[in-house]
Length: 154
Image 1: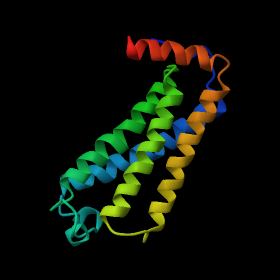
Image 2: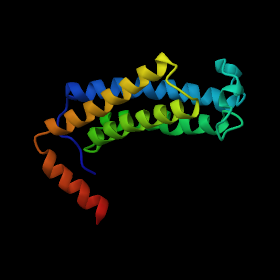
Image 3: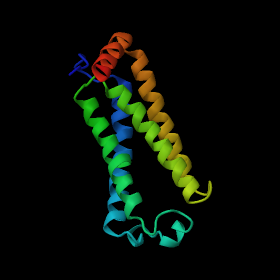
Image 4: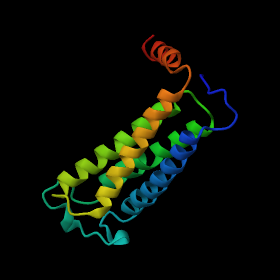
């Protein structure tokens, strides 16, 4: 497995860990609340908000939120702390996943009516941008990218 050689995490990596952990913990708790109470009462969200969506309850969205939007960023933060070479790309994936989640949520729940959605869109964009900047700042980014592509495709 490829690792980043530096003992101290660069500033971008530390920022990625903080933001990924913030996102991950929030989504684990939110998704967990929906899994435990699919009627939404633990978060004060009635199922009437799901009218017109393919979901009769918050169970499936809760599972997706918990797993992909919650555990995914926590895994990315752990990859970073272990100094794995894929960590910058994991940050990009986490950011893009959050942007996708919020975008689908806005469409399913009909509209741009929540300041929280704006916050999480910005958070996703920041995490993705941090991942890209971090990747580009690596002295051997092209060589590591070639090694990763070889490992993924061969």
